[in-house]
Image (cartoon, rainbow, N blue to C red):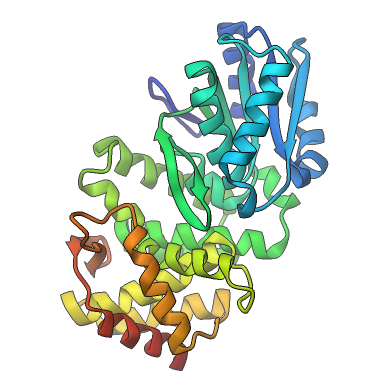
Length: 354
């Protein structure tokens, strides 16, 4: 059966259905120009596969940025806005974002703001982008090392998922994407969580699609993050702060998004156990699985203090108060929780000593 989610905007199509839908969209839009945004890696490893499936007679203009989170900036936007302008892009142009989460986040923001908005399509090429970044309409850039501080919410015309692109990924990028799938299981479905934890014996396309369906179910009920959608930030309050800290300090290895979120989920699950009685045996099961999958990063007291300082920039904060998403059980959540710094230190100690 064809895997697809049909919506007014942001419909999602999978594998062979993706390329058929691309042709339908191009016929419908009749764009004046088509631009494809890649990074230096997806231009080499993914663009040739894209070209094999692009049968429309429209001429393509290729835009390329350097790879990596450090390029998800307003400076990169400025470069791309100028490129679009110099190449004659107008309001009838189409931007296709072919890449991982940096490309889809950045490209979506560029499209939403160039000439007050042109159409865009996301074709995610990383596991993380397929199950998370490209779905849900969040487009934006970082502010220095602070994650996703500038952006807009607008769904792409469509999201086209082809799991063949996963064969192009380095192993660490592939593993990074599993963090968001674990999160979807934690917030939504124990049965799905158990299947993700058996990842190597499951059908990858089925797991990817189920993750997309879970995220779509959540955002359909709460598109502007007033309540339920906040659960998609599980593990992200500390995870984003850890990611930002590792980006800015030379003494720490820069972490991929999923690597930082994996740590954040262990910390959030420990805090959930202490504050809202998340079951202890499940805390240990989840911690053991995440550490087995992602390994461990060392943090000293100074590192932890610096991570805590970065929490003031979290987008969920209200009236200066840091607000955590916690879990009472798998699929049962509590929003807008305050957590004392001492408990955060305790959670890091649990992580370090496990």
